[in-house]
Length: 244
Image 1 (cartoon, one colour):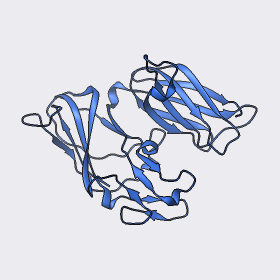
Image 2 (cartoon, one colour):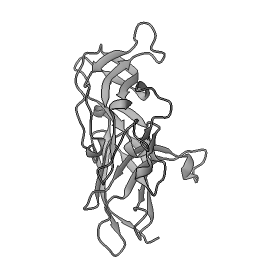
Image 3 (cartoon, one colour):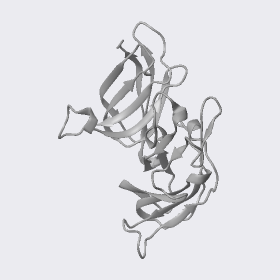
Image 4 (tube, helix red, strand yellow):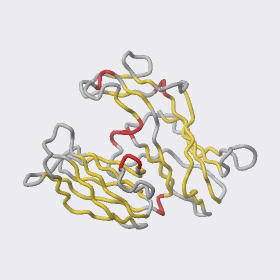
């Protein structure tokens, strides 16, 4: 449940340049529907032209829920349920932008990328009914200075792989061989036909990580040197994942 979105031109949010409200949707969004480039409009608002370094998303945890495949609804009041890890019923999540979002006299379309898979972790990976905890992974980008990555996932000597995990990674130059230390700049999942699309990626060079579902006979694939350019879609083609 998103209550409001605000922006600030100052990192400390105090005094002139503090948070200015952009939108107040006061409604729930099914974030599972927002995949492979889909987006939901939160609203429009007025901001002075300039550079904005921090955005605030206010969430009402008490009005939010997770619905399992069998129809069971988990909330902050059910047991098991959603553990917001110390956040109050309504809280604001501050998002620093790198680089800052530039708003011109003609405006800007700001995208809030909510990483669902990393924001909620299962208490028991083998049993979703055991509940979830919340960490919160969100990024803010100006859509005018992003690109995208797309492709199709398939198994070696087989057909497409659905529900594969797709991750856009930035190599840590201090630990170039330790993937656990690399930065995550976007995640997605392949659809029923194996296709995926990672939108709103910042320009740069990445490693594309493809991991088949844990229940699959197939394993993982890493594709280095995936370049993203502003306004362009990088098509990776067919990505063939080997057997485990």
